[in-house]
Length: 87
Image (cartoon, rainbow, N blue to C red):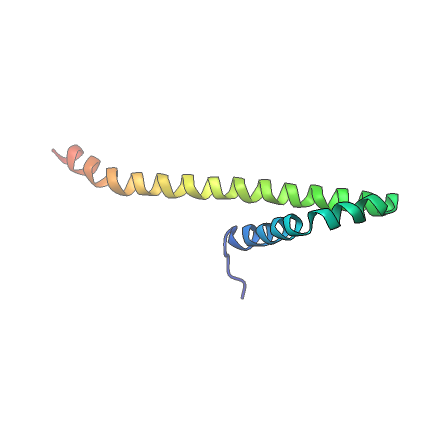
C-alpha cells in the first residue's frame, strides 16, 4: 500500500543534491568542462528536471500551506458564524 508523504521526500532529495554540488562544485565544474557534448546535454536536461522538481515541490508546499490556513480559518470562524446566525 502506498502512503502519501507530501513533498518532504522531494525536498530532502533536493537538499542532498544541492549540498553535494556545493561541496564538490570545483570538481563538478572541471568534469563538466571536459565532458562531451552529449554528456553536457544530458546534464543540462537533468539540471532542468531538478529545477522543475524544486519548483513543483515549492508550489505544492504553498498549496498545502494555503489549505491548512483555510482549514484553520474555517475551524476558527465557523463556530462563531453559526452562533451569530442563530442569534
